[in-house]
Image (cartoon, rainbow, N blue to C red):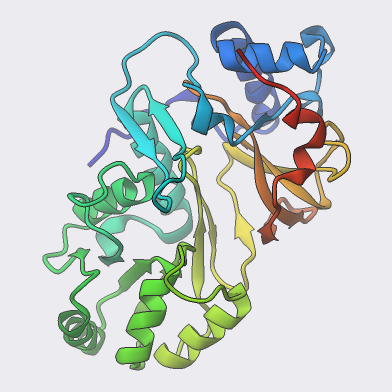
Length: 327
């Protein structure tokens, strides 16, 4: 079980998010050379950053080219993005894994309750194969927290998994089946079965294994195969230490220490709190890297803070920022 500390970033006091984000902005400006150079290159005066929409967001691709860290430390873990051969991977230097563990444990429990209530099954590469994946690390820890004897990784054991799921379903055992999209689709094709006590959660990821499909199509196939009313989703990335969850329909909710904003496609410094645009994320758990990330995802944010991901941009939305090279 990870330490359930009381790090102040996880405080849910009213109004604490904006105050916390502005405090972290100034901390990272002073302690993160990459972020400081970026902010200076934009010509932004720190004293004029008074609200979260004034904060500059670092393009996510900087994690591929720079060590993005706030302060001087030897990382306890380095998470790397999976990519095809020849691609440059993102690298997230994590000062303390305990902070990540507290973030994902609290985030999971807010949405689903304690992991100990489930048998947790990962249709993912195991920790031994992909120990540098933040997602695999998280699922590995949740499997441990679940304490169920059948919890584990089953990526290449579809037949065994099918028998196990039937057995668990007959017992009425709550199960979380979490997997990359291509693996869930492969399993659904080979072993469709009604599952009454299983939450099926996709984490995205085709990675050339199958033709690209829109989320709705993927969810319909999985709903049909497993007699589910809704397919759940997890939204996270190598460069974040927090996750958002969807209980169906691709509508995600953030934990209180994470927020999704939008930037204008033509003007990356034009930030808004709702509507449609390119997704910017504030993740207060990224205390020791950078909490303000400009992603390459297009999305919609609603007035209650929930959001949808509509697809990927090709990076051309970065226009002004793409001219900046941090030395």
